[in-house]
Length: 195
Ligand code: GAR
Image (tube, rainbow, N blue to C red; front, side):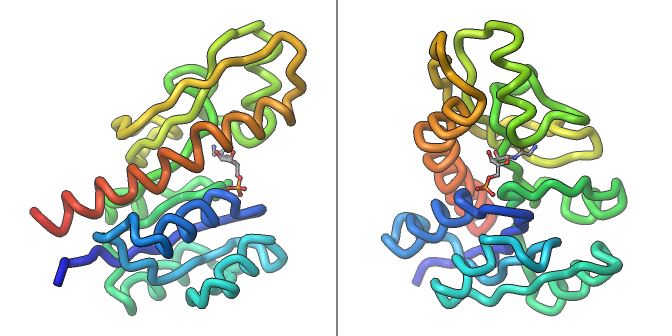
């Protein structure tokens, strides 16, 4: 039997990155991952339905977020936290408690178009404004600096001349985010259980 890392995925919205993880996990491509819990900071996040459909325990925490989150994580001995479209900034104290155990997906090639204020569609709007021709996605460890932790995996995606921010977002999700997030999670989980 393979040892598995217990994983919690944090979401705030659509949850398409969560879905990518669920799909790969159900296909058996994440052998070192035990997808244990999904946490949303919004009651109406679409991602909640995705977790329910896959029979993964899912909770919404809308008050005293970090305090309640910690309780839930400790109760289940969660090893790895994945930020999958989770748009709340976690405190330094929290991040230090899970040093090298929190990973985030960001929709650009860090260190470009990242940090405070760069999230969701805003990232792609800024890319188009600068006439940048290659963008992509990055999975990185989370530290005390927004989008500043060690990079784990990146994938480049072409920006087309006539792209809208929505079109670019969709292409980066399909060609990069949904591929590298599950892959990076498996890598981190494998390294952890084999430590
Ligand atoms: C994704 O594009 C993700 O990379 C981005 O928000 C979107 C969430 O989509 N995250 C950030 O901008 C974090 N700084 P999803 O809820 O469908 O996965």
